Length: 340
Image (tube, rainbow, N blue to C red; front, side, top):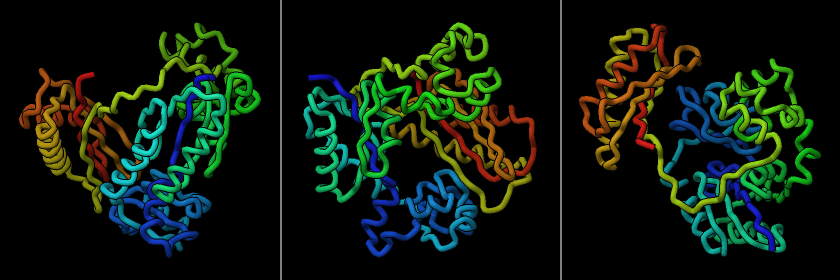
């Protein structure tokens, strides 16, 4: 018996839920986002594999998605429906003799002691399919990092195992941003240091990266490239670290007095939300997306943890004052951060 970590990921989850509700859409490109109107501003929440073949992906502006795939079916986001299906899936995972760590609507880690991890993965897939009619992919690893990355090689609806023994055979020649937790900016910074692949990063002296990424992040990057991850699978329920509100404007806002008014309004809504949840905030962050699609954020600490409207609104406006640019705005967001 060995301890294996399985990463269970529901394939094209949101789109798949919509297709279950509308079987006539099966096989067609489906894009879910905003209120479902691609002529309005908004971003793609998810796209079916058929839509992805046209370059449509999560986070893409809806209007761009329409240009890339004009024959797609566009649908509005139905959060309640996705949460209900997700809860059913996570309950299914809870039926197994394993530790389950829920990571979101469509994914979870499962730690299980078994002689045959693939058989457990097949049982999970079959059970999810029987209860929800949804397909899933399962990545298997000796830790969470390996399992998470293995999932990408198993899609769609497959199973893939990644271990210490196969790590460099699979990932050694890949660019560093193939790793979980390394984005394009970090990869570019590593590239400037002459580190372009996972194998090259794994062979780097951790101390050499500390001056460039900090004493914690630098060594962590090397550890990740070596396929090491000490984080255990934990069943402790996920607790959000922040709560926010956003609004995308159908017309650009050039008047910054109007911008201030919108930030104040969002801050009041956020204050009401967290007061209802009885979770005081310690910091307020404001996000501004300028025209055409350039995003910046600034935060302001609160004097004391609070759910009161007045200090949260004041903190949001103080954060807004840190923005130097006064260009037209297409999106605003206000987020309250909770104590760690």
